[in-house]
Length: 287
Figure 1 (cartoon, rainbow, N blue to C red):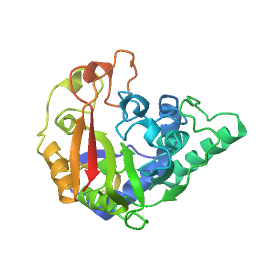
Figure 2: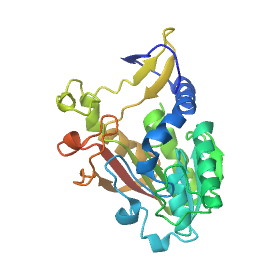
Figure 3: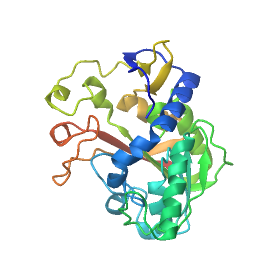
């Protein structure tokens, strides 16, 4: 955890360079705490789309698991590569990309622990990815270091897109590296949540801001330098970016909060989840 004075939370403009720099440092500094807090829920080789717990093994948003074999898959904003490890367990050929070096170090740690037969720090290995070392790439989602038409599928579970200033460029880059007919599935905070406080309790049920205000959420230090940035897009913004990139939206999934899930995760909670959507999952196909 990064030590020092508590950052100031505000809404202000933050461009591509500032956002990228701030979020790379934030995830490098907070990856240990994030994996410690959420690693058990995420598992070592499980593909979870968001805090609701929707599992790709049941949802099959990338397609039937039996059809993933030998597919080249790019995971963007992979963190510790839990989703990629699950994909590898289905016989796919995933590549896990993340901006944060420390997150990718956790990916390698889990790979090694599973290869040694000791399990990752949080176990939960249900996807068959034990013993598989996933290729890791540290790079910015807006500048994917791959040739055109390199992948059959691409996916991102809360990775990259909420944190970049120019998400339209990310969509274009994904389309560039996908083969025609390839599927691109990504999950983000449901845009309607931006009108409500990011609180798990009753205070998070009252709208206090405009849904249409795209001003980024910024945490900044006492010098006014951003240390964490999130960017808001409305549902319409997302759809327009998708279609402008040469992708076709084929489904929009809004997972309902399941009865079994009693976990709070930041502003996500059973109370809010049973009343308001918390996650939006966009299922797209490359034209």
